[in-house]
Image 1 (cartoon, rainbow, N blue to C red):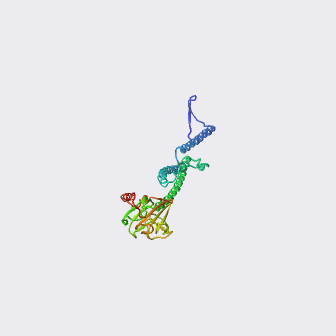
Image 2 (image 1 turned 60 degrees about the horizontal axis):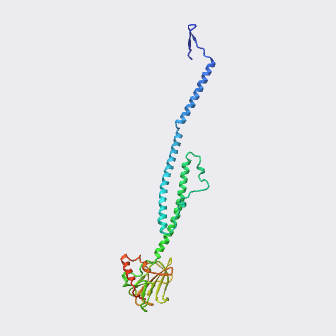
Image 3 (image 1 turned 120 degrees about the vertical axis):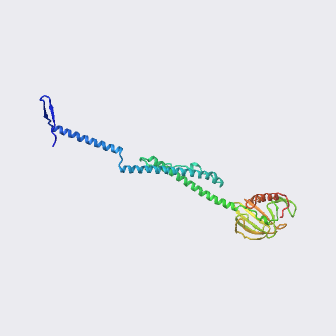
Length: 323
């Protein structure tokens, strides 16, 4: 039951009952409803602005986690770029220099991707800039890795060839020091033992007893093992490749045959005195691109510094050769 309200009438000096008009009631009700609606809308608006729903909080956490992952990815890419730059520097300034290969220009190593926009599908998002920059760095990094990988493949191939070259060069003394009587004669002008005339001696004479082992001075293929060359008697000629050849003359007998592959240090024959020879010794020659060169420059693989200096002194004496 609604309460009855009164008001004091000063003219009649009495209380009179307040009569509520129906029109006013509708007006008050309308104002109340409208105010309530406005208040509700305002409450919802403020709640949406300042109060997060569980779903919004979950989405926000996912976004923060994605941003963190991108930051970690960029940090790892930065570390990878530093490592790759170090490898590229060593590749250009050490490996490729050592193997006589042209360095790879920075423009080729760090080239980007021109033409079509590769990242158009990543545009239009809240974090598009971050995502696009990360993808660009990753693509460039992948391209640099491909370039470096191909370079290392090339270096590996060059290293293999270099290894073969180093194994092929006639780099050891063909007769061991402990088997030598003496280094009888070196490369240069010498007195001929038969005519006593000074002439060019194109090899080195190692005096040793008959039957002393002779070893291949480098990897190669036996080109000759016969006695058909004038003056050399029984002799062996090895083709080492890369323009190098070695010759072993006046042998007592062979331990190899023509077209046989030999390795450095392998036994190929024995000291003798066949052909134009004054006594048991090995006459040894080295050729480069068809030209005879001084064999003494190729003993780094078997002599100590002291032994080499001693041999150098003996080889420089203008004495009489043994052939």
